Amino acid sequence: MNGADALIETLIDNDVEACFANPGTSEMQFVSALDRQPKMRSVLGLFEGVVTGAADGYGRMAGKPACTLLHLGPGYGNGLANLHNARRAYTPIVNVVGDHATYHRQYDAPLNSDIPAIVAPNSLWVKSADSPDVVGDLAAEAVAASYGAPGGPVTLILPADSAWLETSRRGPRINPPGKAAVSDGAVADIAKALRGAKKPVLLLGSGACNDAAFAAAGRLAGAGIRVLTDTFITRTPRGAGRFAPDRMMYFGEAAIADLEGVDLMVFVETVTPAAFFAYPNRPSVLVPDGCETATLADRSHDGADALSRLADALEAPAQAKVLDLKLPDPATGVLTPAGVGAAIARHMPDHTIVSDDSVTSGQPILNVTRTARPHDWLGLTGGAIGQGIPVAVGAAVACPDRKVLSLNGDGSALYTVQGLWTIAREGLDVTTIVFANNSYRILGIELGRTGAGAPGPASSKLLSLGEPAVNWVSLAQGFGLPAVRCETAEAFDAAFARAMAEPGPHFIEAVIA
Image (tube, rainbow, N blue to C red; front, side):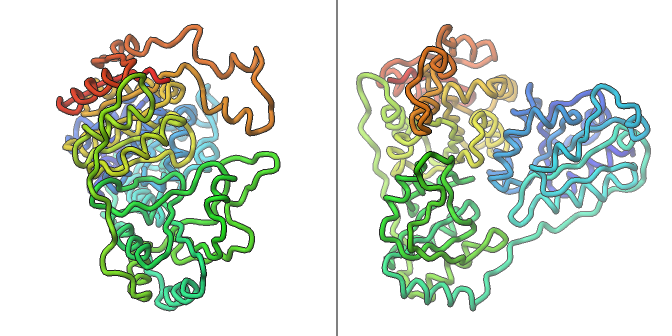
């Protein structure tokens, strides 16, 4: 057994069963070792941003880490944006970053870099296995560290000689750490504060957005306490049969207006909300003047349990009020995001997984799917566009029995369009939708909000994706996907219905008004 074998065997022993990879020369021992361990599923991404985003999607749905295989510092650097999103999603991921052999580092070969410094900002834990005899132990330690709480990406650096040299040692099995319980005293203090507030709000972070937490939060809503979630959530259970909290509005001034009169904001696995960006003469902190804040559970705590006990303390109703199934009528005429949303709500089956990177098209779809069949919504937690396709890849690998829907702005999709090839190669049950408006529309909105003025000839060229317009159908077909272009609501409804009725990959270009 060499170091690469020890690494893979230890990962398998600790329930890490998927590897999303874009390897190079320094990772060839790991690649070879995969042939000796059939329990590890290996999935190739043509770009590291696909690899890291797929690991994020897998972890969000599986509740356990996948590993990535990345080629030295530049390989990790290519995948950094989606690891930023994963860090903000608190997704457990074990990044394996190959490195030069320990004795070769001193020669500063062309791919040499300061890997620990590159990976540190988006890694909860970083260590280099500089001997084959420590590879297994560090692999087990990395898996444990990825669970947190609250969890996130970690990085194990694997020098080439540590991978190829022999060892007799594999790492131990670990018990994934759980979240701590909130003290009875803290629950009692928050209950007292809520009783004394005139207009309180609970703000839930990603860790408190699951079925158990929503059931408890819905009870509190029945007791007259408004429940909000952060704007972008790792995984939100939505649809019929579930409690539906509001979410914090994206634009700061809209959020402050929505919170007018709130005198107490209680945080549950989140922190003080801030505007996505700073704007002249607009708020950065999204807490109204005069509003007190308190924390029921931080991100190391079990928010669902704390909410349930808080509901008991306040003698809230025994059951949350949940949504009834209500499907919209089919849209007609010119295709709009709301029309796309109507088709999605009408045709997506129970327990569909939605990977959302739709940017300006997203809110109308969220609105119209609110009372659709039960589904899970994976949000853009870190704001780095380009996660829609890769996260869908990982979600489909984690949940092969569920439909996966990838929603993408055209600008967002171009960041990681190589993921379409992985969908085709793996035969994943993913329907990819690209909203084609031939522009970075969100940037046009932001240009005005920042006070930069109306776009002129030069700035307009930086906001437009036309001249030439991307031929999405040809692009998707070139990556191996069946693809169709839809310009009307009727055409989209028919195409989406077919995609939901047939297993396997589908691609739809939605030309939106």
